Amino acid sequence: MGEPARGARRIADIDPVEGLYVAASRDLEGRGLENIRVGDILFLEMVQNRILVHTSDSVYYLPNSLERWLRAFQTAGLTFELVDRPCIANLSNVKRMDPTWYRLYFNEKPQPGEKPCNVARSNYRIIAKKIRELK
Image (cartoon, rainbow, N blue to C red; front, side):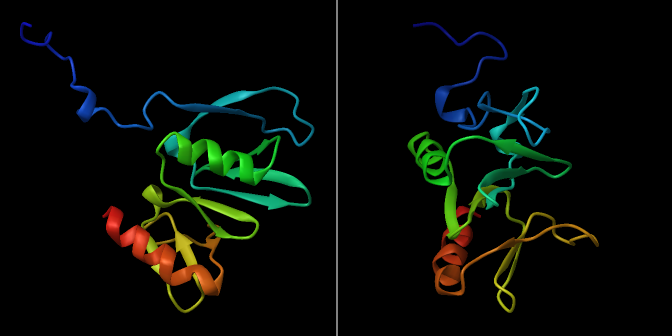
């Protein structure tokens, strides 16, 4: 085999999240879909029987169950974990952990109004260890 084409990347160099999208809606009733890069997802949470998908600049709605989305993400080799009963976090996007309040933040210096992802107290040490192993 010859040399790879200029600009070509080896499979080992490709980010597993690159090219993966989730179709979600900004509308509570599901009117209109947008493709969201999976790598842009900070966390998913169940609120009043609806799944909310949080990115750094928006909130979207998804059908189905958290368990199915978690299984799909993990089967694809992504670093999503159930951190609390109603919440799945993308551990790759976590920038800061709060061991006092058991929260995950997705910016080094969280801004006022920025929503953290809560972690179950009983699960915090396990999640913190997984995050440290990713860094």
